[in-house]
Amino acid sequence: MSDVVKSFDELTADQRSRAGGKGGSLARLAQAGYPVPDGFVLLPAAFAGDELLPEAWAQARAHLDRYRGTKGKPAFAVRSSAMSEDSAQASFAGEFETVLNVSTDDDIRQAIHTVVRSRQSERVQAYSAAHGMNAAHEIAVIVQELVRAECSGVLFTANPVTGQRDQAMISAAWGLGEAIVGGLVTPDTLIVDKATGDVVNRKTADKQVMTVRLESGTKEQPVPEAKRRSPALSDSQAAELVRLGIGIESLYGMPVDIEWVLADDRFAIVQARPITALPEPEPPPPTEWKLPKGQYVAMRNNIVELMADPLTPLFATLGRKAINASMGRLLTDFFGKPMMPEELIVTVNEYAYYNGSMTVGQMAQILLGGVGIMKRMFTGAVERWTDSGTRRSSVMREAHARR
Image 1 (cartoon, rainbow, N blue to C red):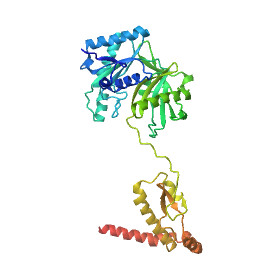
Image 2 (cartoon, one colour):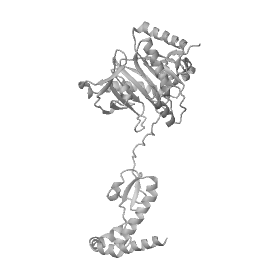
Image 3 (cartoon, one colour):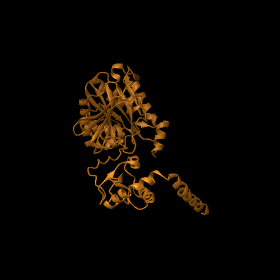
Image 4 (cartoon, helix red, strand yellow):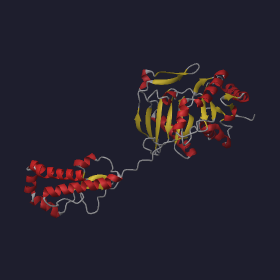
């Protein structure tokens, strides 16, 4: 059997595609000089079905022995790296099993089997079906040195909410990242200007739970009271992390989602993948507000104030036309003659405004006819409804009945 277990440094560009999305990404980052914890990948050929081949396990033990020879008694994280995982089409984040903080040969081997067999789980099958993917996942497995994280989280090199490419978003919480991935804790959220490294918005959460290492394995425990409402990252640490992210984004040629940990004031990168659902960036606000030709006054009052957002194309044409026509007839009936602009509601930069651009003649008619207008406004409403409104309603009902 040829080598089916490769360290991140050993994986060639051709072999990365056989190491799955996560394994190939970590190898690419490590070889580019980014701070990736040491580790190796068991390629799909290391398995017969869900069973680890003996020769593949022997190769894996050789890697483990080498780490132990240089680092004493390191602990490891064992993660999946399916061929379809962490791709531009689907992330499978949290769908396959992950086993943290294992160190003995028996525990590591059992963790590898646990990860491989998780491809048969109901949640992986359901996720695959929801994304129209083949549920028979070919899988590689990563064994990577586990960092003693003081805090951890996720960095998006573009704002995943607004789509702004000039901003980065950081989620951060105390301890290992499993509490964030599992939805057990609300993390801090920081928005960082990528050009300057300045934190432009910060929401420090009440972080009640953290994932911590035991002698073997991990557990969730309450965050100490003094740290619950304290920021997990300082502004300078956030800026440093974003600088790392900008470099990784440049390496990938696209916005990426990066999993990170912080230990002894040094960042380590434990995953990077394309952002799979990034909205188009919001357009910048307009700087010019030009009125339609021939108009000089536009106002935001009355029913226009209820149209707070830009009008949809359908409403801006058909809806606005219907409102203008009906209001025009109503005011003409009320005043006794056309005395208002033909278009009462106009659009400026797609927002609705009342058109206050009246001609000199129209303003003169209103001023000269003010007494009559006021009389019609405050008298005869009941009669107009009884004589005119009821009659029109009856005509419409009869016309509808004849159809």
